[in-house]
Length: 323
Ligand SMILES: Cc1cc2nc3c(=O)[nH]c(=O)nc-3n(C[C@H](O)[C@H](O)[C@H](O)COP(=O)(O)OP(=O)(O)OC[C@H]3O[C@@H](n4cnc5c(N)ncnc54)[C@H](O)[C@@H]3O)c2cc1C
Image (cartoon, rainbow, N blue to C red; front, side, top):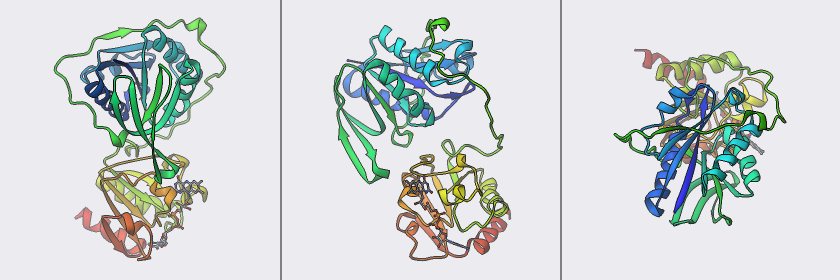
C-alpha cells in the first residue's frame, strides 16, 4: 500500500495548476495499487491555499505553516518534507516537475536516503513495486525505470497527468508541527524581484505565443508576439536565441533549459524548431508555426504552418483578430 505525499506548489498563496497534475499522478497510483495521498503545503498564512486543495481526493491537506517558511528556501522546505515523510511513514513523495521542485525535492530525497526521478510521464505497477517512465535527453529517450528502497521521490510532468475530478467531500486540513528553531539556516532570504505582468505564466496558460530569432529587437517582440498574445489572452514565450541576445528575459525561455509547457495551442513565430526548443513544447495539443523558410524543422511538428515573413503575416493576423 502506498502512502503518498504530494508537495503542493504555490506562489505566495496562489496554487500552481501543476500541483493538481501531481495529485492526478497520485490518484492514478492509488487507483492501480491502493493507498491514499495527502497534500503537504508549506509556507505561512496558508488557509486560503489549503481550502483550494480540499476537493481533489486527498486523505488530508497537511499545512506546515510558519513565518520561517514564508519564502521557499530549499534547505528548510526539504527538512520539513523529510520530517513529515518519516512521521507518517510515507512511501512516495510527489511534486510537479518545476524549478520549485528541482530545488527542493532532490534535497528531501538526500535527507531521506531515497531514490529520486524527475520528468516522470507515466507509472505502472502494483503495491510498492512501481515502474516509472521518464523523459531523458531533451525528449529523445523515454526510460523505463524502477527505484530501490522503501521511499521514492518523483517529480512528474504536468502535461502527462490530468487533475483529479473535484470531489463533493472535503479533505480535512491538518496542521503539521514545525520546530522553527530546529530548521536549517544555511540560506537566508534577501530579496525577491518579480515582474508584474498582466499576461498569464507560460506554464499555466492554455495558449502561448512564442517568438524566435526572426524578431529583431525587444520592441518588435512586444509589438508582434506580445500584441498577438494579448488579443488571444495568451502567455508569451521565447526561444533561447532571443534570451541570449538580451531581447527577452530568461523567464520567457521555453525548452530544454527553459520552461516545459504543454498548452492547447502554441504559436511559434519565427522559431526554427531546434531540438532543444522542441523539448519544451512538443507535448502541445496544437502547434501553429509561422516561418519564412519552408524547410524549417518546426514544420515537421506543426499542425498548421504558414510560410511567411513574420513582419508581414503577424500584423495582418493582429488586424484580422481585432476585427
Ligand atoms: C545545451 C543547450 C540547451 C539549449 N536549450 C534551449 C532552450 O531551452 N530553448 C531554446 O529555444 N533553445 C535552446 N538551445 C538553443 C537551440 O539549439 C537553438 O539555437 C535555438 O532554439 C534557436 O532559436 P530560434 O529558433 O529562435 O533561432 P534560429 O534557429 O536562428 O531560427 C530562426 C528562424 O526564424 C526564421 N526567420 C528569420 N527571419 C524571419 C522572418 N522575417 N519571418 C519568418 N521567419 C523568419 C528562420 O527561417 C529560422 O527558422 C539550447 C542549446 C544547447 C546547446
